[in-house]
Image 1: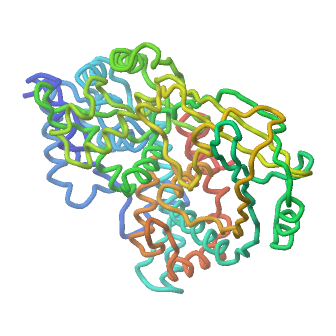
Image 2: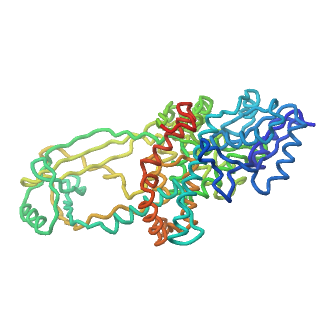
Image 3: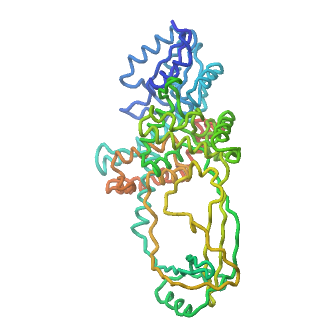
Length: 548
């Protein structure tokens, strides 16, 4: 008979925790949710305060019997499911099933699966937070009602077996709307003009871009306009009008949240959201490292906070100072978005001393790549600002002006370790320094180069840029991005072509039907406002039944 029973969701997490808690503690896994709404009917009593009708999930009968038996034999029961709303709801369902033993039950949470974090959590148990449970229930009930009311329309009008969802349908709408923008886009002509110039003293050449006239920017829209400017520039002298020297500072990105991790893993590693989250789950739950045993390598991976603990800050400082030197360290605090659920930290390594290279042989290739990304991003977030020397030059040619910019990296700082990726093609302009030019100096013109271009439509979403858009618009939460996008791909409402997300014909038909018939539900504002109301339930500012 065990003194203590600890219940977690997964066997991997159970194996890691077992090592930290001594022989008289039994650790078992619930294998995720054990109760849910029935699949065969609505399961929500709309007439009676939207009361949910939960049933035990099919196939979990033997597991529930075993949990009840273990609970009866234990003196104390700790429910240690994940530290978020979903985890709190699983804890509440477990407590409901084990109701006969309710006097023994407490809730524990930890943000990382390390010995100190787990032992500390066991010493500081609490009650189940019913507000977090209600926030999860409100989402589950609303999603069930919305899906249950919308799906039959699709069965009737398109084909049986199709389904709709509150967040998924809005994600499809974003992709369809973007496709329509692309189809309706009318390109506009524009021209750029470049002067290849030479400093007479050093003979060094550089490129200046046409700016305008009398300090006013001129946009060139036709070949006729460019020809007129070229005629006006015939035999012009190129005189340096103004030279500005300065310094540019670049700060590191904050530690990862779920969405920024998904975006960077997509951009830099080519991982799908689903792949990123499943690898992160394993890194969080535990990897076997010789001399340390099975340890969680990263903190909890479902978070929208960038806050980090003082202990983590301290260990990062020690590592940075000893590896790179005192001048590479900077004590940084990051503001968390006002809508974030700030109970968690940002995603970071649990042990600063476990550098990616030092444990590479114990990780799979993909685990190593993601761990390295998380590790370097976190360490860089506590490192010094990068500093550039900059120079910008204004050049007069008759009544026209050209401009040139240059920059030179003076101190790498955090960029020694990590630089955040981008979705677009934007590059640092003016890499490398210009010659040491002086005001009123005359330059040699080597050649003028005009280039015709056309404006481009907005790009199609990628998984990374869709996550960014969903987050910016307040649609969904960290835990929902991956399943949402995976579901609409699986349902063939959208397809991925060379990383870009495009709506299928089915997706367009479904979107048209739903937006025409459920205008109030399939819109960005409704979906974002509902997320805020879920947050208010979690923060005790609203009850689950409130309808104001």
